[in-house]
Image 1 (cartoon, rainbow over the protein chains, first blue to last red):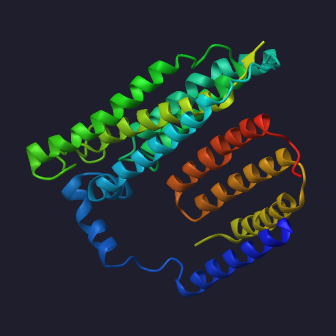
Image 2 (cartoon, rainbow over the protein chains, first blue to last red):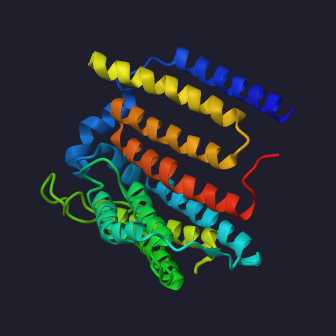
Image 3 (cartoon, chains in turn green, purple):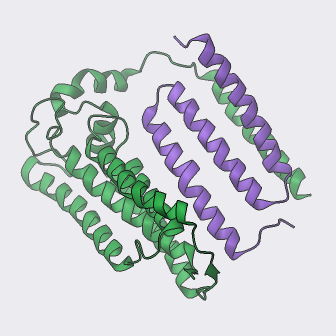
Length: 227
Length: 84
């Protein structure tokens, strides 16, 4: 019965997606708004990655909403799980090879995640993927190492500070440039790390916030201890 | 545009995705179903890379193949492995 119900849902989804795909042409020329962004963006905002400037400057308020949704989801998970009895089931000790390999991989993955969000205005990626990559490093640490990422209070402090600084940057935009989340820093040399005004600053905040949030979520999900 | 070798590889990967999704649909073991979901996420990130959306590919590889798997596995450790 359950399987038949699932099959019906899948067929409905396939019908909807196929009918859209047949109508919308693939890989056509960008439309009116997209052309405007592509033409005027580099000299106006100075970001090499046009997607980033759309996400952070033209639609900065939406990104703030996205961060808020993620925060509420993490809050909901921890509110659900703190009421539950924390299981003290012993987990098998990780093997020597896994923990020794993780000890070398962990800093490299964190560095890679930081690279992604620091270079968000130049290369593909940005705050959200970079933060999640950092969280996967902590996931590996929870599986293979003992006592890494256990200081959950520090995560919460970092997360709250980063979110607050995001909003403060937006309010500084009101004070110095006129509108919320408007660019007020100099654009710098096109294509270098310290360029594009407030974009890298905002992405550092988003990256730190998402990374610590996801790592905290994994910590509250995992339960159990190494024995 | 896209060379024929890449076209062939993506076609094979697409058939693989369909096969894995049918396997997920009919298996009773939830752990195997989760691992199948991870495989689909990995292949989907290759697809995004071929379609020239590298930022979406990074996100799909880290969320779809990394975090989702971990959260589901932690969940079935709290509930149960077999579907009824």
